[in-house]
Image (cartoon, rainbow, N blue to C red; front, side):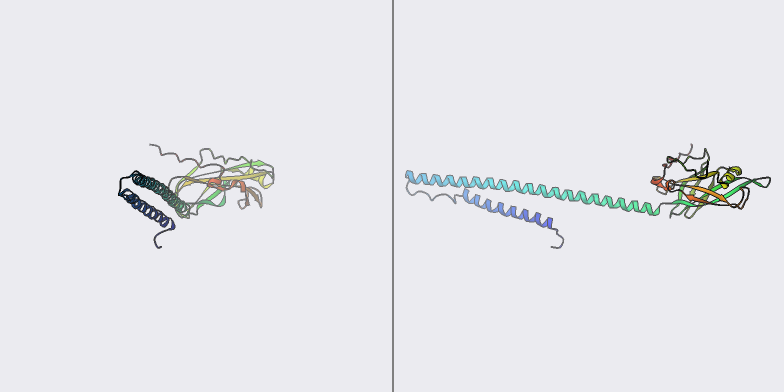
Length: 284
């Protein structure tokens, strides 16, 4: 039947069957009370005739009592069925409401993922400082780019480095991406496809020469934190790499370099080693 499910049809069938049974029993009860089961009146008031008539009257009353009990039982059964069916209907309604809420949440989460900004590692650049036209310091500048659809807000970034003795130096397993003291870069908003660079402290040319000679290892790490338009959470991206220099002394402005991606220390959001900092409120 169009527009009715099996549960609705069963409910109406039970109700119809209960009403029909009650109607039949009620008719029998009325018939009994009207004396339909009584013996015909005695033509002669003999003891035997009166006893037979009394027995018939008692039987009619017993039948009426049984019918009354049956009607009560039917009513109770109908009430129980109604309660059970109502409970099932209520549970179905609650389940439907929960499913609707879950659908809305999934749709919202999907929209947030698709529309949020994604600030990712872009590349790196080298820059130098000179002293009397000679290179005195190097900087490694880490580039970040917003590859998402919407703008990144309240963007902050930090870039740092360490030089470890030996050609095979490694970062500790519990490395926590220490920030540069008071040197975070705050750039505000970063639009779609927008990018920026942040450099390390100036690294003395003597330290870079140790890396060139294979006597030391240079590690550079950087992170960026930002918000989306919904401003309900802050996001974070981390990168870390091992840098190598070759092609001449460290004073050579055209020195070549490359970096090796370190799997353990490159992550996004929940995969980062550190959670993002909460944005500090503006001073009054």
